[in-house]
Length: 380
Image 1: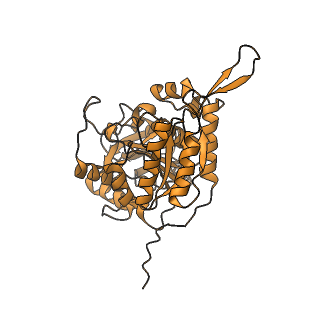
Image 2: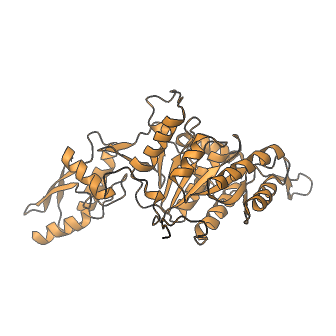
Image 3: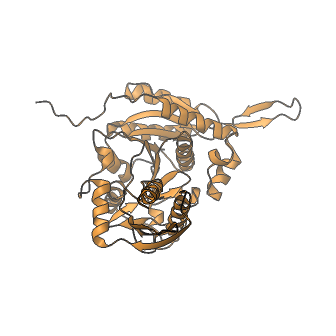
């Protein structure tokens, strides 16, 4: 029986908590395992909180894992709840500290933080954010999405999380899992979907601190942050809290959009953040000609806005700011946002999705540039 207990424990070590993304055995969630002579396994698994929204997922995964062990005839699973002391110990295990420090601000952080910015609203910044995050996740990267657009949050809608709410463990917030992403937004913390957020600067700053420090993001390759449009309080706060973040500027071909997008890039430079490139959204429409049958590019909103922003920022900032992607107009891109499933997941073969996947390729494949990177070292 002792060998069967060991095999059951090994099987449980492969069960991953869907929110924390760690084995339940590492988290102290397996309280007891008993194996009878007839192969029946009785075990108790402790959920982090009462009413855990993913209890059914954990229950199904545990049953499947234990029943897969040769010699196990049946499983008698009891789901309990951690005590306050156990939750506090879990928090210490995960974070390794009790203070509210931001892990991404540390010099040794390996997470690439990308702030998706725009000078004005309506350029498709949030669509680029969620699709880029999905594209990075599709390449095997561990990706978190932070919706920092407090007043105009739209990420929950675009990822089908309008009714989702995060779990809190001893004051530590778990991001909501969705399609391989870890997501947090003020929209998930409101008492009702129609509640209006009307906060002044200091409260905004505290909310951002909570999103970055109190949320257990785990080990991320990328944190993609959807900024509000413009150059206001949120951009200033994140510039101070995330000194090594990089900025991706989204614009459209229109001249008016290009001019204000340049301000967003200049703002990043003022905060000593590097602008890694420009994305031109709604760049063109690819139409099939009824006469020749060939596809032709139609510049619905003009042309050259992305190249102009990239050129201006390169001159102004003193280093190359490339035009990383031109994303064509695609009604399915907007439809995916309304349905809660990004286009790169439902139609990766479509031109807009291909442009976003290529953008993810460029970002995931580049080498980390340490120029301007704050290493936390003070010369003496």
